[in-house]
Amino acid sequence: MRSEISGTVCLTSLQNWIPDGGADNIVLVVPEDRRDENYREQTDLETSMASVNDVRNLFTNFLKGPIAVPTFDQYISTANLLTSTFSNEVYNELLQSTSYGRKFGNLFTVGTLHLSPAGPLADSFVDYLNKTMTTFDSVKITIHEDEAAALLAITTNLDERTLALVDFNSHNGHANVVTGDLDFTIRMNYTTLPRTTRVTNWIALGLDSKYERYFFSGFNTMQRTLADFVFSECAEDCPEVPSAGQVWTMPMPTNNYSQNVFYTAVGYLLGLAISMGFLYPMSRLVKVLVEEKETRMKETMLILGVKPLIHWISWVVTAMCTFFVISVFVTWTISSSFLPASNPFLIFLYIWFFCTSVVAFSFFIASFFSRAKLAAIIGPVALFASLMPRWIFYGSNRYEAEESKIYASVLPCTAFAFGADILSDYEYSERGVQWYNITEGDYNFLTCLSMMVFDTGFYFVLR
Image (cartoon, rainbow, N blue to C red; front, side):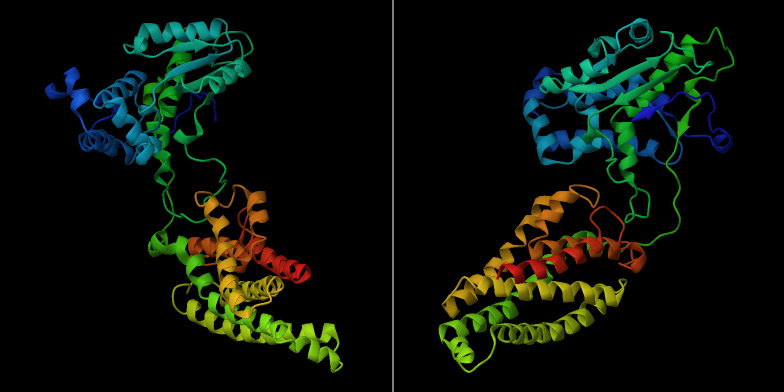
């Protein structure tokens, strides 16, 4: 993420707001019983979680309304206090078994501060930290020849924790905010900051609390520290440059919105629940297809003069008519109950295309069996198994792994489950899937419909 220093601050909206206390007034006191080294050995996960919650609650008051960005000393001191309250074993447990590792970011993993490129500017920044920060000695700083060398060192030494990589770009080797010849890039581990792969969050219409990670990760603190450094460097040339201490931040406001939290709890099961309802009709279809082979009825029909293509089309039409009736009833049921906001016709297309792909998949499965009872058992199992790849992408959004999801959608239930996830997202925002939003995202609802149509043709050809 790129950050550029600017002397203009939006103070107009804050001039009448007087905070109860800013980040500069944060004081953390370590209880006496936590200063003993033996405490680190005796503490357990429950006590450590309480300590983590204490610090989390401490920050809560500063994450509402205009927020003062903590200084470098405040951030590092808080991190040292937080990590000093529990042992390495509990520390690893917190990171692996809870969401605190992502929420608190570098507060749990304060490591080396990498600077590039080597030169007067990086040296001046280190000298500035040494003179102004009391916690300077507790942070390891490494200077690299250039950004590429810094990235190579970070990626090849993964056991060493990294706070951030700051890359300076200047034309004359020293900071000069007046002429605008300095900018810098702050790079951090992607797990400590909000994902930038999602360009727009179309679903969560309200305030996304992930903006807090810019504070917990230390990104804003590092940005403030760099601003203070630049202002100190150019103070003699431009004494009117404002102090970075006057900079406050606040999240962008949102319009009125409503959300149905029901879908956050059960939305991910929607595809599983609906697809399981098709296991029985699929089993019956596979059974009758194989029974015809088992009883030699197909050969009898061919002897009587029925052409193979006409015979096959008759089975397809019969199956399609049966599943069409199913599609109508399923669409009516779910549209009038737990998918009320979505366009009913799009819901029908979604269910109908899934039915056609199930019919084609049934013909494909039936071609492998000569015993009807065995086919009736294995067929639904195969259809259910085609849902499993969907869970590989459980933690991804519609802007991630598009190509892999398309390949996985060759399995009909997987494509159907991806569509169900999109439906639950839009029902959560109480907008539903509509014609205007079926193309939102890299893997969108239209992609889901297209893949089920493709699956229909694909499995009919394979049979």
